[in-house]
Image 1: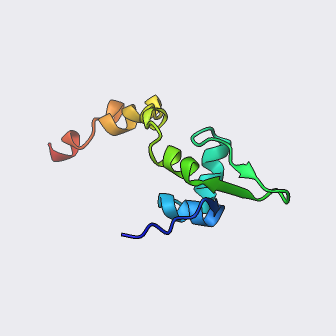
Image 2: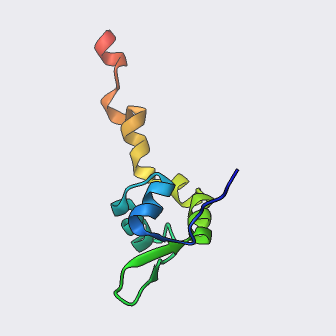
Length: 87
């Protein structure tokens, strides 16, 4: 199998490789989910193969910490949930 891989990717190409939108890649970088992109002399982001592999294999721990305040809404909390509707 012939490997015809590039060494530098524009943001659209990197997003496609990762299966995410360009906007999420930008926001993910700004929020610290991804490392800062390299910039060319015009300020355009570009990524190396190593960058893409690092982002692809990044730990999921930040995502798993999600907001704790979501649990009362899911658990039914004070509203009684669907059990009172069936009575």
